[in-house]
Image 1 (tube, rainbow, N blue to C red):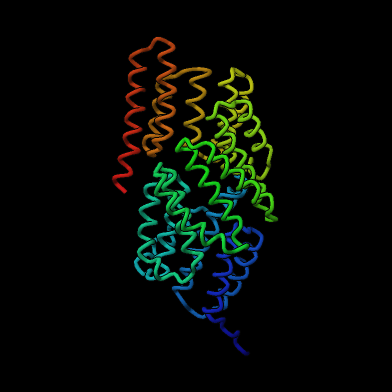
Image 2: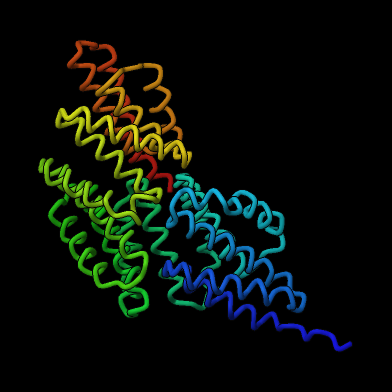
Length: 378
């Protein structure tokens, strides 16, 4: 009987590279096809432990992509990230060179996914030490883009903008990465929003919207949903509350956005804008929808935020508010802590609870100080 000819590991490596290219551009159908092809080839591949680890790392990255894009319900049916991560960590002592880069980079993405942004940055920094081993220019852009996003999340806006500039410059040279250019514009807009440069924020979001409408990819609608959400934030901060409401409604009506984790953010903002306009019935409606979605996704950040908003406009419970705010503090989400503490301070001032008013004002100041301290520590 003639034995089956072994597949060269180098050939499988080329397939994994192609697979990763589709992951980076969020081309889910193509990525799924390449994943299945890689798995078939591995069954008949010559022994190569480094290549098998590369495959496991890419499977982990594939899972991260799906968790960010797919409806929450579909993600309940797939292998869990912790299980995949455990397999990778068991082989970590043997990792070197390019694999060391991917291992730290993808683990940073895992920490980011779980909103541990400082931990994510530390993994990204470890990955950066091995970035020189990665010959792919686009991968360097991907690295800068992810680092920009992480720094944005902890309010280090000028560091974020510096990394965004590096990423966008290379992405702009290829039509294949147009979706990434859209992503850079969205992140530019988000930084400008946080810096209260609202006209510039809207400019970048409008430019992103125009580019996104040219995309033929399935992810285009999801991206457009995110952009309408962000335009809603800009309009709300500018005091154009009705325009903000319309933008959030436009966002949540896009199914591809509404069914993902990002849709929970829009439900939270809809609850807030309706409550703040004294439209309590609709505020409560979106609070309940948002809380159900957050509970199903086990999104503790938005469970906490929704419960605090509910306390401010429906039924106040001090112990529950402290617990929810404590969660945000433990996650070092200082921008959210500062904003919500200020609202809680105003609430207690209006109620004549001056001791609690002072307590939450102190929390606001502490959160603002922590934002500055994080900049010094990183």
